[in-house]
Image (cartoon, rainbow over all chains, first blue to last red; front, side, top):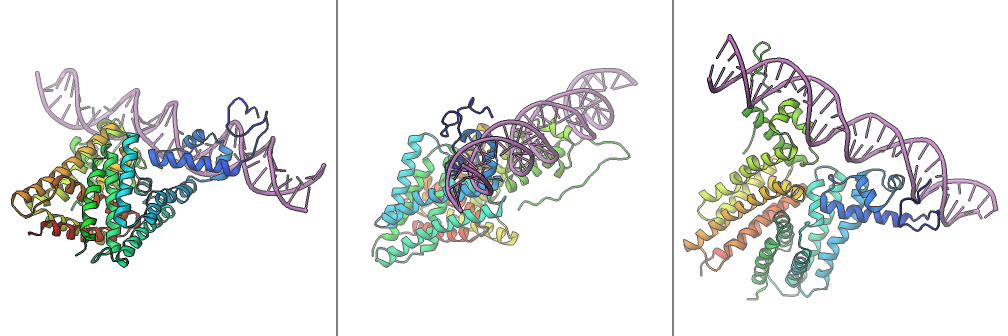
Length: 215
Length: 215
DNA sequence: ATTAAAACAGGATGATTGACCTGTTGGGAG
DNA sequence: CTCCCAACAGGTCAATCATCCTGTTTTAAT
């Protein structure tokens, strides 16, 4: 009924309503992604997301009848994309793995320094909290880790094939890079200081340099 | 290894009550520690802890009027002790840092393999969830990271002083070890597989071996 | 024995949670 | 144009949350 007292930013001409299912869904998922990553999945209420996204209870229930479905959508639509964008794509366009990794660390350190606060890695934030709660979400998060690992491992393998390095284990080295980044981000988030990321970037660069040093 | 038996006592002789403030407090903190680490701080209700610890609402309110005070007690009394026991003490009694680190990784991998499930590192579990929630808890968790880092760094420094290694940065190397362990545990928790810990143990051992190789 | 405070018991509190309800409306298919 | 269902509005629901209340009992100091 009298809904024109509240300013919805959906396109209303006079007192007419405009259906925009994809837009509403995108607003919900975007808001949920931001809030889940910053505050945590459980600490964030459906009402809070609804209000931030300016979405009615009916619309929310229509698109996401249960909270876990929204969580799953956030993981599949946003977290996957975030990892791909920050890690996998730079990896694909770089000469070799060490250059890509150092670039990625540098980008993230710059970004966090500019922002002034560390909210953490989206994947890790959600994984740490949700893993023991919902099996479906855990599986989805696990797949993202796997894709991340595969991309890194493939790049290391390509470097081996190109003769840029010898005597390494692409798989375990990829695991090391992911673990190092995840752990450094966890420390940085807790201490609210990028120092851990800087340290790990330096040490990792040295480690990779020694592995890529021809003999 | 921490294992506790659930003590079912009614220390009531006839219908008399026995005050045991330290015991009740210990029961609450033990139960809270276990549940916080497994389920998460926010996902765990005060009522759940009360019931698991067989403590009345009055007693709970008397010892911990607010949930955050219980969280703080868990961090200061239990998480600190867990890190000291699993990391700092083995570090103190080992010949050098690499031996200690490999032993610690081995112990944890064995324990998790035996348990069959990965609930994660107590410090990281709580840090990831709480850091952006309560400043006091964040500070307490940050101090534990600092103590952990200092112990590792001191051991590396001692190895340098003893002439067991040269050309390393004890501080950043300590950060690397902590980040690597934390991240590997996060991956292991999400994938419910100790593989990441095994990979990181191997890679870290090789890294340290190269740093400790005399020339 | 008296007494004050600490320790404890057993609820009651309002606020908030996720889920769900009944209606109403928009817009594409026919 | 007419249908009809997805899309959406706004409110309700029981459950659970952390917190706090009023009493009672224990315990140590005097």
